[in-house]
Amino acid sequence: MTMKAVAEILNHASVAKKERRFEEALALLEPLLAVEMPPTGALLLASDCTQLIDATPEGFRRAEAYLRRALDLDPTSVEASIELGYLLRTAEPGVSPALKETIERATLLVDQADVMLTLLRAAVLRDQDDLHGAYELIVSAVVRHPNSSLLARELDLLKDTLNLA
Image (cartoon, rainbow, N blue to C red; front, top):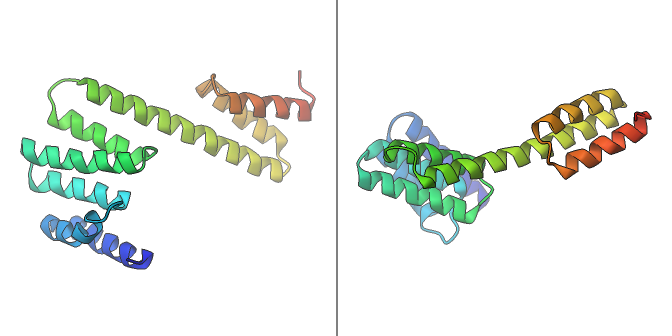
């Protein structure tokens, strides 16, 4: 199946979901879900539709299986981690160990993405000769992520460049 065909199926299934035609969305997703490595987006959409069609414990188990499969295929998926967290919070009474683990994993992924995006933004500011702006951006990120060696290294480089102590 071509990437264009996959995108079209995902688009049509998303439209069906938005129009509250959940069974139709799942039917559209079937060819994508049947492959060895289904797209994460198809698994997320299937989980959403399954939850909306069948709010029973069995429906939640099927929805959870889609999300866990998405995370098996893409352990870095922030969206799948957060969706799994919401599902576990909804489906299970109290705060389960699985929910705590899911929140910890999602937090780690978001923090890693924040560090990487901050470094990219700082690089762009340096490219625009805004070294002070890059420095301020990195300083604020170090406050959020004091254990990041990447941010510490970037901060040291900027201090050297700006002749700061």
